[in-house]
Length: 224
Image (tube, rainbow, N blue to C red; front, side):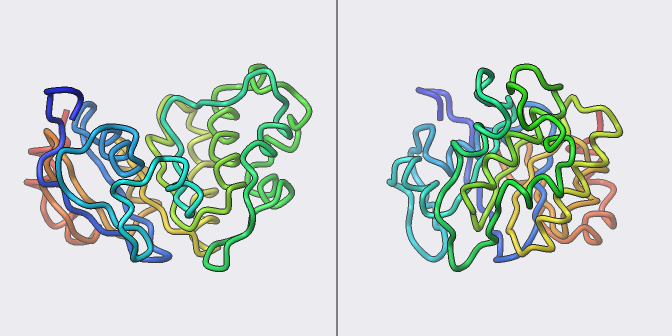
């Protein structure tokens, strides 16, 4: 809730190790609020958040991140005065035994645009490159689960294609992902399971095949 305004109602979802899950819904459905609630960035009136078998409901956000939960917000919060290389170093954390290990060189392999811009200030690269940098900086923390909030929003089609391939590479490395999206086509290309959220409530949960067999759900909660 934000003050007295409750946004989420009885939301329940689960992500298994190594799994990519999509959270889809219209603008204002509660996707970003759910991510903030998981991280402890907003107040929670009830409920429980468990990560890697441990109750993290009352842990401060910095401690949640240290435990291996990475978060990429939708508004590309980079350090605009720092170079790409420096932004990556800011996000560095020690390796984890249960998570892929990322280095700048490995990240440049999946985000080649960043290699070319590595010595430029973050504020002087394109919006798509800033989105890539935000994700790459979070991966430098070697998370075991990554929350990606609207990764395709506002990107040119060519950059969206690169983003899809980058997320697929993260999956191949064994990273668990929860991807929030309005773009159903994008979600379908990167995730095996899907949750549909509307007005702060989960309206559907299942595999992509099960979702495709329910056009009534798509028309009711995702159609413009």
